[in-house]
Length: 410
Image (cartoon, rainbow, N blue to C red; front, side):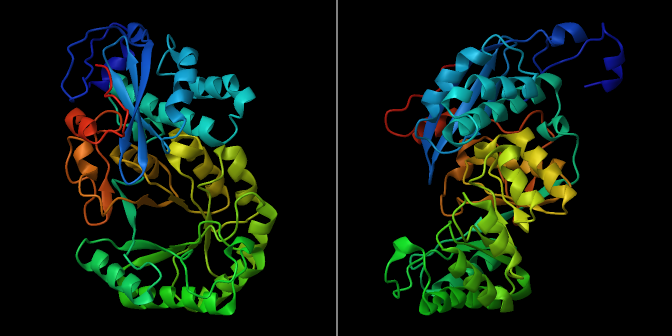
């Protein structure tokens, strides 16, 4: 596209179709904004998680792809949202986002499934807008700081509670798959539990979890960073004891050691230890993340882009975090669509640390799109193609649809 022509209201320009080919449309700058959303559709793909893919259609012949976190009631909520955006201009992303939040306020749109559904539409709007304007999605967020975004591999073994098995898998993922950043779960049975419901960790349990950390970090050495996830499983005192026990090891971060609701407790846990603490995937929108950041209750903020508000909201969270010198490590369990959306945000913010990749054991993850080599040596190159830079492979999507789902109408 000739950007110099934007000064001329009568200049011609071209738009690209979903395959990246030019559409041959000729319009003035004013007419270019005369675009309306005509439909929104969803399908659920049966991946290692239920991936809800979202498509926003326009009367310009351009459709955009997004993703909302985790199946369930998301398609029904998006169907409820559709009347609020059909007929609207897809370029007005912020306005439409706030419009959807306000329209769904009576149904709890400050958090949960409503925000996840809105996030899926918001991602698709960035894809649509990028295609209409012929710019990558990161450009809509202010441009890029980096050409590729680091990905960390969420690792699993058949014996997740076996420290040596975790160390073996860590070594394999680093040496054979090329990642230099990993994560393992610590909320795994140790064989010493008495009552997991009370969230209390007995000393043998702490020692077992510390042994996992010790084996993994020693095995990968300085070849990779290793983080560890607790999935909100532990009581405050137990979390403090565990975090202090881990201070002797090279822990990238300890994630979600306590339940997510009480930020005062989270602050106490974080400030009680030198082990870096990461939190954020179960906290919604900038308003939800605010106290964590301003009260210095986190060392690393970990929003999930297709869940907590979408691309611009994640960028706003990052801006707030940057004021407190807090890096951003985006949680992510998505298909290539949601993962690339997170990476586009990671390219556009200064404090991006990494984006999670959760599907290394799923052989067909990349088959859902026509593009290849999305992750290279543990990093995700950022495409220069318009929008998210990915093209859905509809045959692959259809092959992996969840039960009862039908492919998008074209």
